Image 1 (cartoon, rainbow, N blue to C red):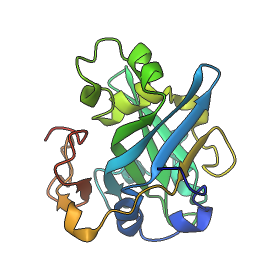
Image 2: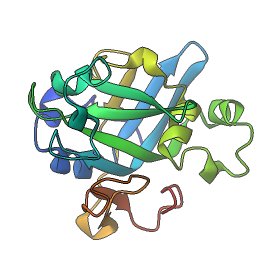
Image 3: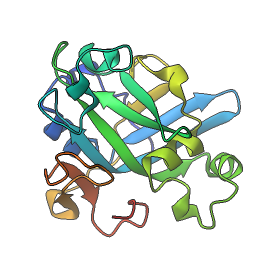
Length: 196
């Protein structure tokens, strides 16, 4: 299957829940000096603004959260646990801070490069089955934070259509606040979905 067009900014300028669902089946692709790696998005979570205690915007506008307040269709990449980067696509119009977190991808391109970046992954399904893992496998770091997802080295492309019957919706995982909100979308029975 060949990657399609780069998803336009207008795709992201909608309700975060809708964007997170429709990102399933799209291709997350990153070009670096070491090569290009990509994967089909199989799991996402929505973080929906200042009223969402699990969203970074709950802290208000800070240096860290500034990209969330900017235009839709840019990258929000942050560091957690002092060791992992996490990638989000900023959603909704400017001033409505929210984003869709990509939690897992199914490797498509550059799998050997992913293996070199994640040498301790025992199986290929362990390369990208978590938000920190996929960023390591693709080489995504904070250097792309705030960059356009239409014109830079990190893009999301049309790829595969995922039917509603193939999608499960669950509460978000790995968080303490608003943990019961059903804002996690995943492709059923896909081995690359994260645990939880």
